[in-house]
Picture 1 (cartoon, one colour):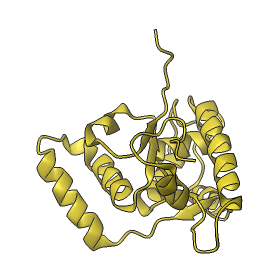
Picture 2 (tube, helix red, strand yellow; picture 1 turned 135 degrees about the vertical axis):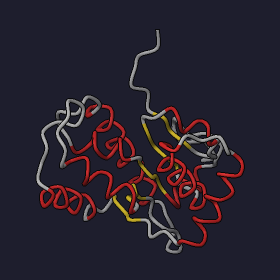
Picture 3 (cartoon, rainbow, N blue to C red; picture 1 turned 90 degrees about the horizontal axis):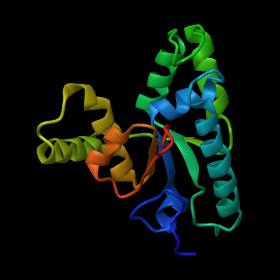
Picture 4 (cartoon, one colour; picture 1 turned 30 degrees about the vertical axis):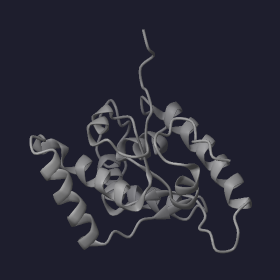
Length: 181
């Protein structure tokens, strides 16, 4: 069982099985908005990963941690904020109260976890990434943070955003939104 999960790069499944995934805000948003342009892609990711994690969890020993699909503070707040806005991509806006209710419904699912970031380790990784990639555009600040978080906690970052390739993460799944020509 030393094969990587489909779409994974660089890490053995032990890390993914122990830690799980960190979906980008764009994955969460597409998943919870049925009219989102990429809803079916996000739903396919969710179904495949949830089933795989459930299978892996059934094989764990007592001292191993169940795999989860994780929120972090940034992805939770980003999803809630975007759910309360109307756009062609995001679908129909919902109230802030309903946006938080959607988040809480997902958070209480057994396959979902919440990453409690520690400032000191994330700050150290952010500093390291900024030094390695000094010419980053200011609009990538959230991406840098999520990449640093995924790297520190050895999570597979899952996104539709090809910009994450620049971070050379040890485990990253970029879900293609366009069919190759």
